[in-house]
Length: 159
Image (cartoon, rainbow, N blue to C red; front, side, top):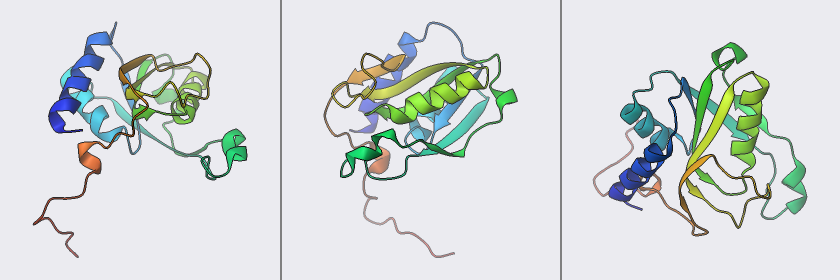
């Protein structure tokens, strides 16, 4: 994907939102860039982050499908309680990450709404469950502009 396509997806997402959100919960790392773009366009200043890890390799060890998520970082309950929270990630593949975050926001007393740029219904492990908002549905492997190799001339500096 290129940046213009990402902007179009962001526009599609914003056009779907039915009400305002009181906070945004960005799922790292995939949700950082789209979350920042959405927050800027929507004027959301209360931005929180969640880092979730599922131990094991689902692709090569299918028995890991039942592994519980580890929340490496998550906001305190009082930051979520009684608030409409937009969760943001780049993709919903299996749906495990977005679903785990949504459930944890609900457990904290928040009202979560999931959003992603791409939804893959063919990898979804949650039956008919799907993101509340998504810009496109695809089974393609997506490479976002921020995931691409740096351009020539850019080098990591040793500080």
